[in-house]
Length: 160
Image 1 (cartoon, rainbow, N blue to C red):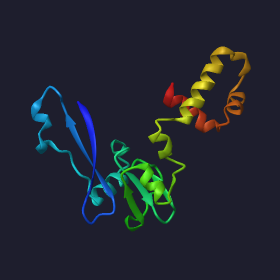
Image 2 (image 1 turned 90 degrees about the vertical axis):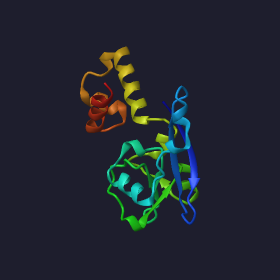
Image 3 (image 1 turned 90 degrees about the horizontal axis):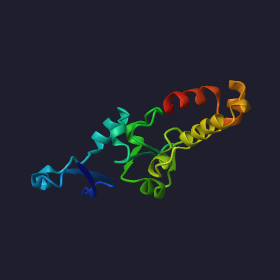
Image 4 (image 1 turned 30 degrees about the vertical axis):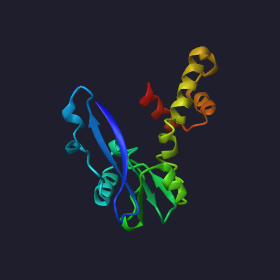
């Protein structure tokens, strides 16, 4: 199944809402217009954001006007009041509205398909394999990584 993306603007709504359609090139019925995906309403986006729905990442961005940040729908940060929330169809729209990326969920890294934590832990693991004597204990590992002990442990559990 291929996921095709098209953007639509709802009349009277300042936010672009995404439409998704799943198509199967071998099945002509899947290309009919009645198989159109769901257009998210503001209420649905609020609900998906409050549920920290990871499947909604990349479909819309949550902007918080009181703090001046934008987040992924799955952001673990405390959720804002709905009246302080705006939704954007892309990271570029949120930036053009004067918002900066969240430092917890890092939506800018998500859209670039880049994970600096993964890069750091892979580099550290590679260095440990090359020269294990360089890291006699956990304290040396933590010092060379530039991360905290708890964060480093969590990253190794997650990725290895």
